[in-house]
Length: 464
Image (cartoon, rainbow, N blue to C red; front, side):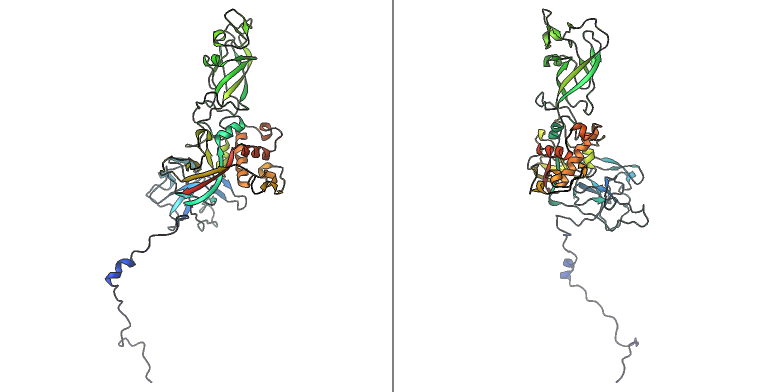
């Protein structure tokens, strides 16, 4: 039998012409389905913006977290989102693999936010943005390039766009009522207008002032430690045991940021010259100092005042906060809803949107670019499911209490959040828990606060 010669180029052709696609099929093969994934967790791979400041350090991995779980986020993409000093001005790509669609940043409610970069200590401005989703997990810092053998590029994050989530919530109005002070969680933005309807337990403070006892003299007054100037109105005052009525106050220079007119403080005289204990406009406003002789130039008096807890302006931040307060302490590690029940917030069906830091706040009544979903409701009725009967290990330091009997039946995540919020308030006062709540274990204080509606769990239907 003759052998076939496979090297003979003179033989049959070794190539075959491919047949052309019939014209009727050409278009359909070039038009695949545009769907990439379901809308609950879009297939949109993200890396964190390398210049985000560190929020806290994971105690297990020792890695730095830059965006806590539950935070509302936006993205920097290849066409911009940061100023020219932020390595992303729209004309350059942002230094990650081409499979990464964008750089994750916290949403800011549509207000540009400056951050201090841990990379070069320079200020980077994250442009005003709109939310694209919620992060399910803590997002760790991108430190690729700082460590030769450390690369987190094998990790990327996605977002939730459709989901029912549960996060801690704080009612700023009830927070202030519980502490008996204003601005414990966030500072007020303006003095309220409720008049005298909110005098609550603990709303009495004492101040010692020195004044010139001549008729018509005034004395400078400074709010007690921990109070925010301009956040409350004085509604009554007692000077050296003599009550000044509201009429005298209305006709005097008396407020929390200026002077107190203490004319007639030593006792007032009526038209007949009789000294009276309670000053009125008729016999005290002109000041006769009936019980005072010699008119010493500088006299010290003890003034006790009652203030109106005016916190109608207490709301989630729309600009950068400064100082150590409940909000700034919680923002480092938790994502949460801030609302003010006095202003009618916190009801079922309330639209929610990101505040300046990407946490949740009341949104616009009509859905807009900032709306991320609806509040289903807030629950502060604990314990549940017999958690308060679970014998958890006793930890003397309440900060590290574990859920069960040690937390009085408060779930762990809510308990930890409440501790951080109240601890921030205590630090704002440069005080201690025992000084603010003498003889009370912190877990008892937290349970009392939850029962009072200060803290709860917000159920939110995310729909972006």
